[in-house]
Length: 139
Image (cartoon, rainbow, N blue to C red):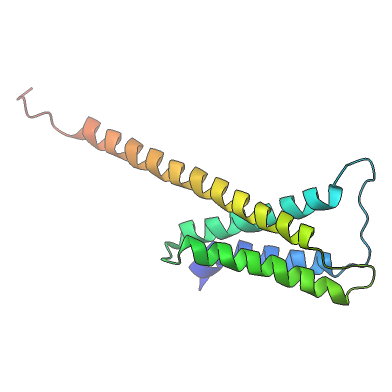
């Protein structure tokens, strides 16, 4: 269970943060920032995508990327639906599109960085093993 929480806990916690944030009535943003609502959706769901990629990487899970991305996209859709019941809030397709793009970019960027880290770690480990290995030339 502790390994599960280390791997998937960030995703679960962030999903709770998103739910609580979308439960707050009529949240306004700075009026000087164009499309501030869409930027916020993109950023917040980018974090969700990143935590999903981390969970898959850390857990060594065989869950496919498509399933995890689908879960992130469905969570964004459910968040928009949830806003129908919150005073001063309303669901918008454009918000869900920003959510979806955030999940995709956050997941893809994080997965790429984690994969690169894994490859660099493996290469570094191989280099260390080669340095310590006998050369076989009798020296």
